[in-house]
Image (cartoon, rainbow, N blue to C red; front, side, top):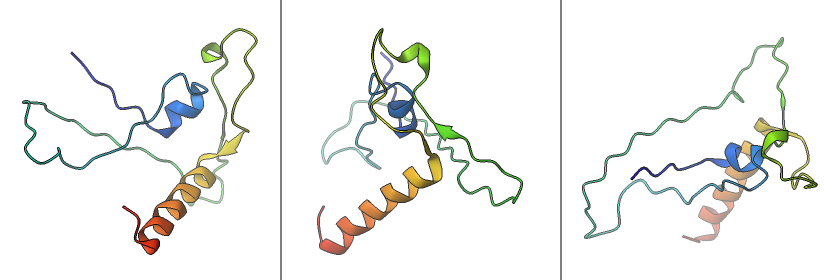
Length: 97
């Protein structure tokens, strides 16, 4: 089988139809099932060009159920990304796992 680990953007684009998973850098101790992983990370929030007009992240209309309303307000990825990094740093500072 194939397992696709969706990221945060897919969660936002799909209005939670596809959710992002907890990411692990390694398998749990003692676990080995012959899996192979291929990772690809992409982010355009580091484009520092003054001409860059960062798009808003909104749910894709085709992925919204009939009559469904978006769960997330339109927002730039850079704001979403930085808020997430701040949460991670706060957890580390507090000693949380």
